[in-house]
Length: 616
Image 1 (cartoon, rainbow, N blue to C red):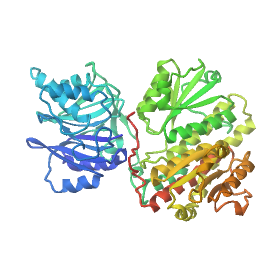
Image 2: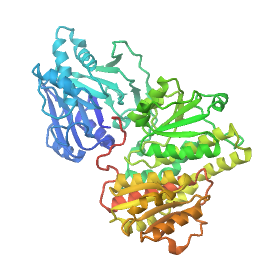
Image 3: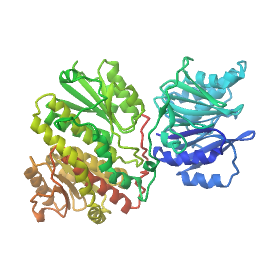
Image 4: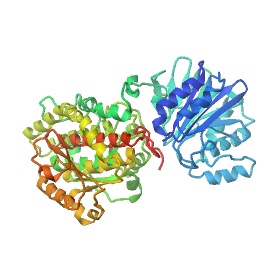
């Protein structure tokens, strides 16, 4: 969740920290803060609310320190107040830190420390970490100075149950910085005479792309012009440096009012990147270089279990329809948060496939580890190169969608749908899918980016439709077969960015209870693009119409829909069934975007949400 950053170098730290926080603000924006070392003390500035308020406070201070830490918060323990904002300082003033994660046993630790004279000024679990490190630092006074700071952090973490990505500074060692991680991302950036620690490469990508991704239970110690990495058990770790290939323009607005809109319009490019180099020479199938499974091994799979959260879960559900239809393999979809604890029986030839845009979603990471613990092979679809899920999975597929800054996922979702269709094609051709049918799906996928461009031309039309419904308080999204997951995603998107109560249902399920919600003030948004059940969907529309509710319908451009049946029509190109859901998702995204902006909300930073969910 939270965005953390640390800096040690030769430049003024506050400017670098604020820039990093601005680029990571999508990770949380309840409160912000920075601390820099100024001659003989830490200067700590915090503010409730978004980064603008902190920047205004910082502008009034003379800060010239070249070492510091910063934080942008998504609240877990404690309300959204200045005293709960990070950084947090130990009550003896020796230790100051920023933390991403949850300390599950913080109450017991706080009670232990309170008995030993350490006090707390906030409601957070993170402040307990600062005091715990300070407690061990005091106990380590006999140790040689060069290792006392690092050792105090290491010993403190042995007592922590939960998750953490943290960056720590010590008043006695102002030119040193210690970072550590456990199930919460932390990345070391190596620049020229400067070092960075951040929860996201975005925090320092403008200054260096030379990085080291820390693994769980590793600590990094930056000291002078060098660094070292050890495990929690004091083992020396050989660092693996990587170059991050980022185009800085991808994390800037470039003329768009919001990242969400920019990323909606970037979908043709994201889809091209997802497919690039992944079709066979004969054009009849897809291939993936990172699955780490041979065709012979994949043919033995008799069940696929998908795990995801939020929008990724909706993508998993779409994958179920696609793989069962074109590859004829039974598929089940699990909420990752439930799968970990449910202890579901699994056949020996089951394959688990997890989906996470960031590759750091804690519930999904835990589900993956649980499946691996039981001996199952786990593949991943993720956009997060170098992420925890990407590194720990047995194989997988990178989305290559580029950074997604908007909290509400758009291009990552359609990229996941595209890869699901390609995976269905690949698995289908290993089984019963004919050469001719394979060529048809592959060609449909190749045409997809151009068809998405055609749908994006409907932006102004969709905005006009949204303007007629911006004052509603409830909305239903309805679809059948492969349109049902898009209906679920449509309801989720509308809730996320407009704060309108919305629900997604399979169209035929309306008459089994939810139709009781229908009123003239509750519009119904139909995804009517599934050819097999189109007439049935029209019947469902009549049922809604008879009860006076307005109807918006996304249909294909060759659909002969009775004009009197709907109030507003959004016509999209007819496409192969493997890609039609992707085209249907674009109007849903644009509708949610315009509903949110017309209601005056910041759609890039929806209330109570954050981009990467790294807590349970």
